[in-house]
Length: 93
Image 1 (tube, rainbow, N blue to C red):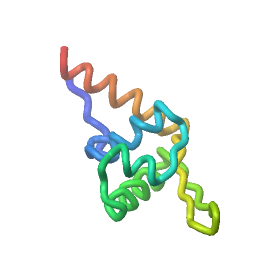
Image 2 (image 1 turned 180 degrees about the vertical axis):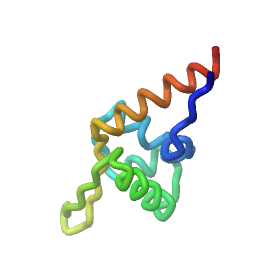
Image 3 (image 1 turned 120 degrees about the vertical axis):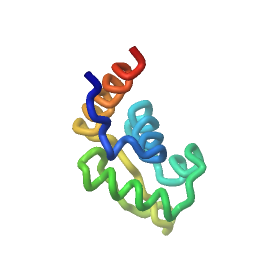
Image 4 (image 1 turned 30 degrees about the vertical axis):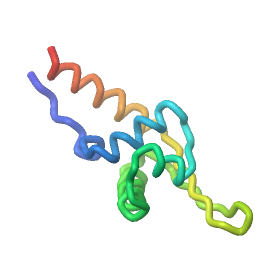
């Protein structure tokens, strides 16, 4: 029987962001933007959705008087990603 796929992770950009954070744990906004080829506005919206779901935390600071946004995966995000991958694997069997 097929399990439902997590609608938060089923978005291509959100899945890409979480995948990057699974590998790197914490990344700066501009690095995520560069890796995903997303626009700043779209990435901001998707990061907010991931944060609201509890999958990532976002910290905003300053570096050389410029805003610096970092995203970090949470335990809940790691678990959701792991379950998502397991569910996809069931589809492939």
